[in-house]
Length: 144
Image 1 (cartoon, one colour):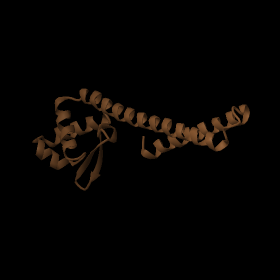
Image 2 (cartoon, one colour):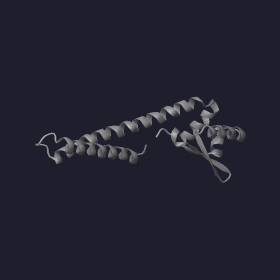
Image 3 (cartoon, one colour):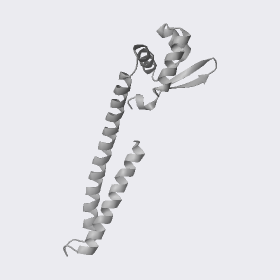
Image 4 (spheres, rainbow, N blue to C red):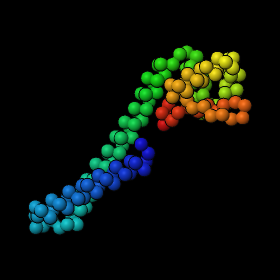
């Protein structure tokens, strides 16, 4: 969830609660001392608080869910796949395959097979760049 989506949730909650508050105020006319401005301010404050809590919980849940997905996915990797994946993570989530091969001291064919497996498991993406590949960690595995 992005910040924009979180603000969308807050705005939706505010609009819905304001609509319900106006509906109740117009139908029930609870007290003659309450004017529409007082009701709107009270409902607006409640909506803001409820929307803020909902957005915060959604962001926290998303962060926890992505971290959990990453841990579960890492458990399915072989030792060599994990070495490659962690090396890409150490290089800020983007690495050149030829430099990675030298860093990990692996043969081209072994690293290519491992990259293919990681790509099949959707842990990384591979993008052709001249005579090598750029390997990027998928955003679900960055923990952000």
